[in-house]
Image (cartoon, rainbow, N blue to C red; front, side, top):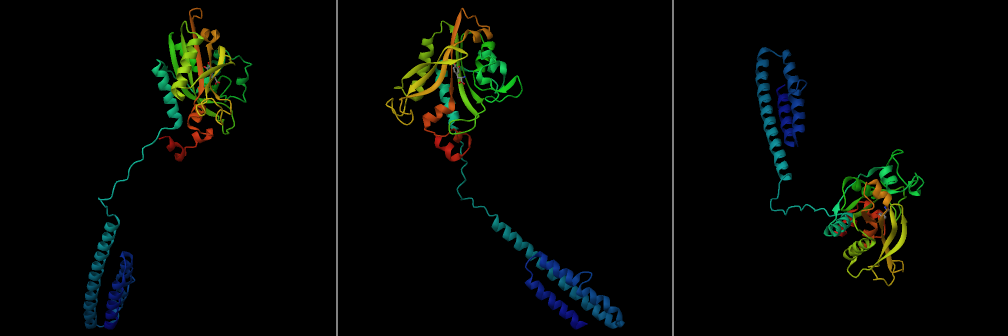
Length: 340
Ligand code: DAH
């Protein structure tokens, strides 16, 4: 039995020598000292021995046990230190390494365009008015002189929430809201989102932006409209830009017009951007229809006004040479970062 004891001791020593981590050491501990361990088995079998033999072997077994326990504890400590050293190595921080810079965001080209248009009008004394994107049929159509049979009211053109509520198809309802809130003189612009049932393609999107404008005061004439918008076009597209007004129809203005600017690419000679005509259409405008002023309780004998509305995407696409409207909404940083 003594031989067996020595063998167990030697075997435990050898195995501990090879143990790689705490799990290995724990395995050895259980195999040797555990309830069903090798050393425990020897102690259990000592009953068959004589008293003297039992005493001698008992002492030897206890000594072996103490020795193995000590070895195991040492090995545990070693493994713990090794694990700690490894962690320190892994987590080491190089304080001399240069810091990571945090990328600054950039403004979206539509934001840049809205800010530029707003800045131009604010420099002419306009202030900013706001209206809801979820609008009533009354403000979006009826109050703007677009009666029940107006084609823009068709369900296939407009996102209705119910019979009376819709996603606004234009920023023009802000005109009526402003007239009901403020007394003339009024001079506001209103940038914002609009929605129409359009299938997305290179020039259409079911969501887009407009900037609306409204001026109401005593003695406002078409000359004020032309002067204001001509000045805006020169500031937006360059001082050599010329403007031209073509008769048009909008239910909420009379007379109505569309304004073209000379192509800023070719200067009016004709190119791909202006499709050879030398002119580019950029907005709708007109003298505010008396029916609209009346909804706003404005004395139409005393006051007149003009209004205009322009598509922000269209202007941004022209200014920056963007050929697909969908690029604005894809959130592709490679596109957006070009406008730094
Ligand atoms: N709301 C018109 C549209 O979406 C644009 C417009 C035209 C606005 C003439 C106006 C205006 O204020 O006077 O096509």
